[in-house]
Length: 450
Image (cartoon, rainbow, N blue to C red):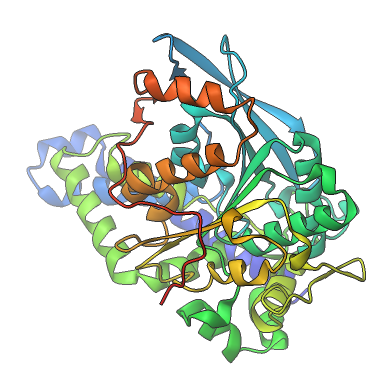
């Protein structure tokens, strides 16, 4: 019961705050009050609107909301989200562009399982759709998975990635964003040993903690300070009776969100205050910048307890990936067995989650891979989010990643890629999709990041 009561209390607090916001909005918007020229009512209604929306979003899975892609034929092509592989803890989904021939580039985006839904990569998907067939790992909220489905830890996660890669075939180009980078590297090494013919063509690791000890951050410091017992006591709860996963031990999304918000409490407080003022003054809109960001940021999901705890214990504390001693089902996975997959690392100079040095450490571990198949890139002014979804991704990183994929593509794919380069830039869902040529060159050689 001690793990169940806190979960129900957190959900009760969230529900109460949403109710308070709705009540304040309804009461302060009562038509008769318009006869009283008091700005306090307008402020109260604005506070209620922002509060209700914020707390309601915490239990809603965002929609991908990608309507169409403009192709090289200058026509709009509708986008359907299809499930390619269905599994209890996560699906492999495909963004099927109607009426368009299959693109020569095939990309698997491995989304993080770190509190937010895979839709956090929406802008990344939008930017890649005009130039590639895009697949994404769509992880499920643990609170919705019955206990009968069993456990899900870092080994299970790795085997899920193995199955997804096998399904897509050896011509797939894998891009792992943040948290899954170490396990994606392990999954590729697993295939190199067990089924070499199923290995992906390229592997791009973006801002991932391959070696957490390479550069200290608040995340790594926290991992060193606390014991596993302290983590389990303070972070793990059981799903309440409201959800299908009742009784499952999880690291709750609401608790994760509290941690996210506390890291930049002043910034978030100011953002919410400014939004209340905009609503009160009539300057806010349904899909303005604030709502667009926080509708996604506040939508959180529960992680299974075993996945969270095994990640901390084995990836951050035990350094099993960094020291090349990670095991799956009792068998050691040797990163050095990767000999044919081209590997690129991307880091942000201002990344305070996975600091520069943590991700590029992967290249030193690839002892069996020739330097001609290794590449790294450091975006000096980019933070963690910017290296996969912000301006730095659109203008610099995305073109380099596509060039890296094309440089290591089979001969059959290269003519199509060259022909596409001569066509007019395409756009997807109203956002810029094809970025200008980057100012920084990117040579496929191993570079040391200080």
